[in-house]
Structures are given as structure tokens and as C-alpha cells.
Image (tube, rainbow, N blue to C red; front, top):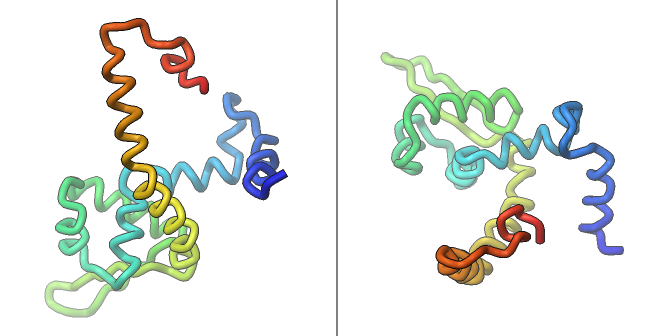
Length: 145
């Protein structure tokens, strides 16, 4: 059995559809780093610290409110740190915490996979979307593969 299957099998001890699954440590962490903005913030902070406005420019389609919430959530989870400098007005800088740094290698694997497979995924979407006039296979509609 591959290491990936062993990990997935160990995770499957937490039923996916039950309300108690909110206590699953894997799901709890993946909910944070798998949201729309967190990985983009971590990628931006991977190279150097950024101020709020720099992060807003780096991920231009995020609202200021969502950026603030995402940064708070990442700080709460220990993935980034917030540093306030005693200037007038105070300036704030965000950095990856050691825990956030430890996420970079696994995240790089996912980024490489996405880059490598983008063409295949794009082609699959086009095929699926081209079936719009036809009856889609039951497995495609239900997400069962």
C-alpha cells in the first residue's frame, strides 16, 4: 500500500458526513488552508514579509475585509505573525511563522501538481461543459468517479 493510501485510510477513521467530523484534526486544518485566500497569502509571504497594502496589491481581487479576516485566521492558527512598528501612524508587517514555513514544502507539491495538470483539468472541463446539451453521466453529476 502506498504512503498516500495509508494516510488517507488513517484519515477515513473520521466519518466525512457526520456532524462530529468537525472534530477531525485533518478536516479542521484543511478547512483553513484550503479556503479561497489562505494559500495565496502564504505564497505571497513565502518570499518576504509584507505590509497589508502590499498583500492587497499582490492578491488584487480580495476585498480589504476578506484580507483582514484571512490574516487574522492565519495568525490565530499560528501560520503567520503580525508585527507592529512604533511609527506615526503605526505600520504593520506580516511574516510567515515557523509553522507557516513548514507548510511550504507540502504546498509546493500541490502547486507543482496544479501547474503540471492544469491542461488536463482545463480539457476535462471543456469536455464536460460540451456535454451541456446531452445527458451528463450520473457519476459526473453526483461527483462520483
